[in-house]
Image 1 (tube, rainbow, N blue to C red):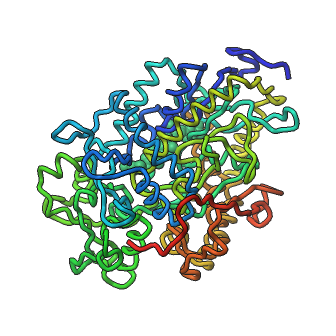
Image 2: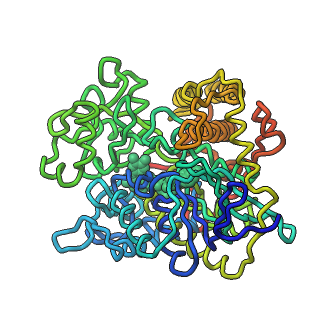
Length: 599
Ligand SMILES: Cc1cc2nc3c(=O)[nH]c(=O)nc-3n(C[C@H](O)[C@H](O)[C@H](O)COP(=O)(O)OP(=O)(O)OC[C@H]3O[C@@H](n4cnc5c(N)ncnc54)[C@H](O)[C@@H]3O)c2cc1C
């Protein structure tokens, strides 16, 4: 096609050109923008207003071995990350994460982030699960924090600095497609297509470097700490382009969601001394992790809680939850360090945490898997080849620094370290690259997608299909899994994909048509849930967050490898076997050979 210029409107489609196009205005996207903005024309496209991104809901802290309050160093942090991830972590990436953590915190401090302080005025640090000194000897204070609203402070600080750098924001724009064109025999990203919520208009953003920073997809589950908007659009878009997804079977269940609701009570509570108790008041984690007890990694704590409940020691009328007890902490400490989460317990459960234990249950929290990248945030198209000009960072990406189980406070760290790397590498690439020509009729794919969700016979409701998916994922693909439970949910997803073809979009209008976009988001949820379940069935071992009761042991000999899932063949086919192909990718090991994971 004739290449349009910046600002053109052709057949109602708006055309934009920026050296760097970033999809997502959470922590990862904005950290990338702060690097890119001063050296290249940068656009950030976000379906949410930036400060509403989920990073703002993060509570507990951001890890860095600053050693401000106790002896610590980056090597211990690396070791904890590798062991916490049950040896599926790429160890070279974990070294980068732990080493660059120190600068990542100092960068934020220099940008104006109000961290909690020690009496001497240094950045204070608190304990968090799986973070230890001397390779597992005892918990260490490694998490930097701003009360229990660390993510909120990070997001506000990054946004203010983006505004300072004059970054171009396109808010409430939903990116629905990635445009690829072949140049010199290689498929390269040319830009993205976005749907503007306010008007229903389509926009094409041409970029030399494209960064995906679209966050997670916890909404494949019903009980989740994730916001309604975490539907994995970016991961789904990349998947539909035939690019691989890595380690999708590994989804983290955070131990302390409010029972029945999933709203998160940060691990910071246990970092400050909270204790998990069963119906008998017993501190049961002493039996499962004698050294670090309640501060064991999340996979171990979540499984221990589920085991207590299964074995009849759950609390409440149905014996179906356990307690988080902070009644022994001073109210002044609670108010200073855990103000928000204690308020959640009062508001949503009517429980007074000063005097009563809080009912809690594991809640779907974090996607360890996602778009595979190199340590420079370049997206991989195979185990070794990258897609030139395409980058990903944050929860949508899989570097892999979290392996099969992320440690608490390592994600706010990940988005800062790899967001920054994505921004820098995107600029370096854009400086030497030419524009990739847009494909013929660039919005054709999005128009087809929208026609597809509007075109069914209208017999199916979006909310009904979504609920059935989420409930089945909770039932069959949560803390414990078997081949049978995964087959059951896999079969259901097949029928839901069929029924999805006939969803009813009630709103036929153009302006603020959230109904239409929820239908599109449901398509991404179905695709991603299918990859999660298919990858989980294929992994016949138990590792980190993936607990197969029919294969309860970790199998390092055969399965210390990443899963790589590819969309192949007929994407519309109902049978996952017909359109998902799985492969393995080696884990990078530098210093740490796998050992039995004791805490
Ligand atoms: C309740 C809660 C508490 C947490 N606490 C902690 C903690 O204490 N410490 C820690 O390390 N981690 C914590 N985490 C995890 C951590 O907050 C997240 O993993 C991290 O913030 C993700 O950042 P991100 O930038 O990748 O994505 P997000 O912050 O989720 O941002 C995603 C962005 O992508 C945009 N987007 C998505 N789809 C589209 C689309 N189709 N088009 C355009 N834009 C799109 C959104 O608008 C948004 O701006 C917590 C998570 C939750 C849910």
